[in-house]
Image (cartoon, rainbow, N blue to C red; front, side, top):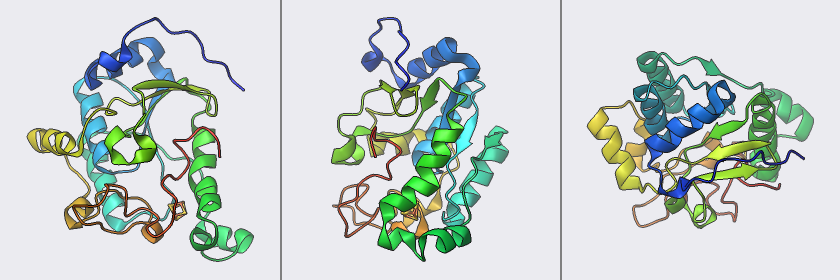
Length: 228
Ligand code: SF4
């Protein structure tokens, strides 16, 4: 298990998103990466990093089960910001059916997320010491205590959450003011977007992530938890 390298004693919680990103880049340089799954937070972070002039590689967490609209959003962001994507290898859905049985997302979604998200991410993060993710505290109870910076034993990286204290309204305001391309599914009731089999639209009175693994207790795919 990797141990946390020491960091200067700074008030990371008080840092606005831009300051935290700038500090992270100064501290970790080319050992800092950003992961994207092409939801609205990806749009914000890709734009912010570009505006700050930070050369931070983007790791695409593609399960091969995303909506067409998510891939189209990716393509628009790649074109507009000149992104070079790193796409971790994941077994094909057909191979997964052969190895694990059909529709693993129904029989064992935790195992499916482990194969299609956690394992590829573990491998993708190996060369890095810092990882920027777009999670926010108000997305669900499971994210309410998210700090802006935390050490991850599991991945052996410092994990940056520059948008931890942003709410949904602020995300949309930033996207609109800056005219950033975003996933159009958000306009059809999909406030949180993942894989096709596990994502449903929600009504405005539901929690933002209520449409993920709807009808089950599952709240997280597992990449943002320390043990699974
Ligand atoms: S979100 Fe669903 S389909 Fe996607 S990896 Fe997890 S269980 Fe599988």
